[in-house]
Image (cartoon, rainbow, N blue to C red; front, top):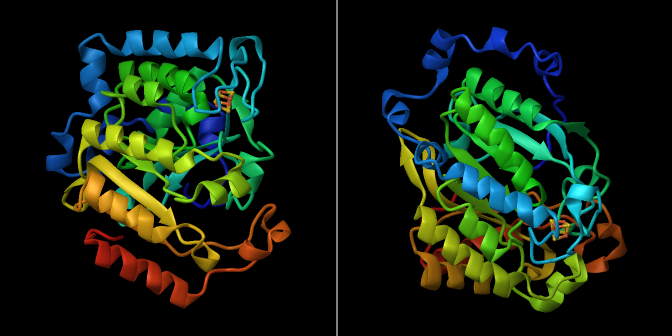
Length: 336
Ligand code: SF4
């Protein structure tokens, strides 16, 4: 998950005056290079083939007995019931803006069109966006309004739509996407998640997502149990990563901008708790040695981390360098 930057939703979008900001000439000028404009996003092909609606219908059904993630709460989200993540029927977002703090290949010149969704299906005790994920700060929006945000972000030149923590809202997001596609959305879709995903849902997303960007947080079941209350995080993630890679392949970049593929994020934790070695070996041996991996050094104790002595400090420079060394040694060379 990206670190949240306190930039509020643009007033222009709040007022739903989006049409004034969709000047075609401006969009054409901003929207990437000539090469990028020739890239057709997966969701657009699926929409043109008439397969997007069936996927939306399937996801809507799941909301009646929610199994959008492996928590399998079985609550009726369409009736407003809430499971572990706390998300109900309606979409809730925290912010939408051109993000310049993401990976360089997503940011480019005009930013990554980032939409932060409130709630989370993982809820790590140390979450770097605790207010959004645990306390669900944000506001409810309709799917039409979500589509307007997407079009707005494209209109100001963003190189992609970057869905941050989308797992628990994916049916609503796809409905918003469908509306936006009909209005001309045509930039790559990034699925920026915590890595605790349902295999079935990832299958449904085949042909929708262009760039999968999962966190790979920890390899130890004991650690994931302590910090997220689940012991199957890594076994599940291994299967999910394979599916994601089968769908989109290694990250592909044109003129500095990513448009398709898998981008893995790994946040280094104090005392080696993330299990970096096992994770990097798995990626190299079972996914691809050409996987693009961002080893992140920004861990700091947030949220409830102060209650856990082992993670109640920043990581050291030595710990970060060691994580990089492990990744190199495993055979990975595309490190952000
Ligand atoms: S998305 Fe939320 S309600 Fe649905 S299974 Fe996951 S945690 Fe439970």
